[in-house]
Image (cartoon, rainbow, N blue to C red):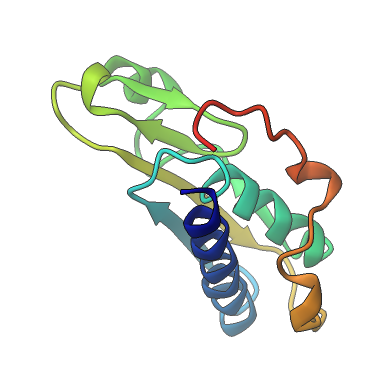
Length: 130
């Protein structure tokens, strides 16, 4: 399971990085998965934030919905993002999502070898879902 999770996370990192690179300043990017694994969710987003020198920032508001609205339907706030789990939402999910705002153009290139390496943001291997 851990090998697949790391492989999926590396692929998802590439997909999100590609979205950051291909959008213009001011664009909103929604990153979403159907995984409960933090390695595929929050850790991917934190790694993109770090590796792109924060070319994007997390948007806390989810469209017209406030944090209170999301909590009222069973969503849990993650750092960063939100997750909706079936046991807390009347059967919806699992779904993780975060909205990012592209702050600037000029995202640095990242060497392929550095994609799967651990960063300081990634070392909490004691997660229940890894």
